[in-house]
Length: 230
Image 1: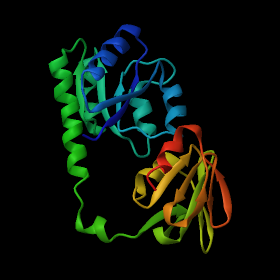
Image 2 (image 1 turned 60 degrees about the horizontal axis):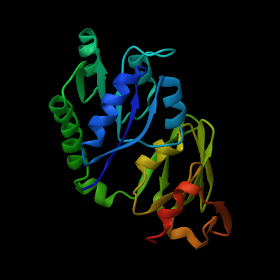
Image 3 (image 1 turned 180 degrees about the horizontal axis):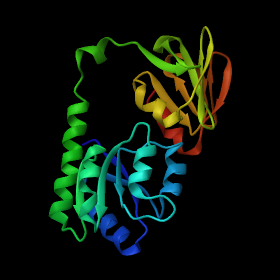
Image 4 (image 1 turned 60 degrees about the vertical axis):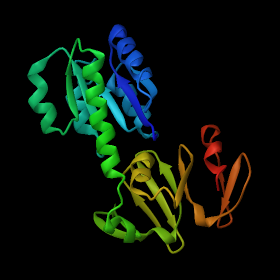
């Protein structure tokens, strides 16, 4: 059973504990972390991918709905709040479900099952996915076609990424985790919080580095296992 990685954005310790306990009871959920405000979560999501966010609305610094609007490619979102009046706005932002506190485990399970069902549907290959071998990225105010076969590696540059291909280099305003979602996982590997490499371009690797087209790229401690199945 494939796992759904999730995070909790909630400033009430008791609510965090209840959600964490519920998550532990669901075999297909994996909790990556909890954040007491949306600013901390934004920093985490800049370099990490998640499949699901449990989001409170009344948060310090940045409110939940305002945070949701900042996400370019939002994952599944389940709102958890004591305020019903934001439900319409939440569904207009395509949230998966809206849980009113306090909610029972059964109601929680119904919500996360919706996420699981949607994930299963998205994983079904379509004809266009099977033949697509390129991506269009925003580069200097225009859409540029980049072939997957020509990409050597992608490097994080703060709010931007640098795409190194066999023919050119491109800069696009997006994060590495946003780019990772768009890449075929059987062709590319995330080897560091700042680097994604093309599997076909890998020439050699150790526990600390991977060499692609003669360039040495560091392997992050948390990504070493990702190369074991090459």
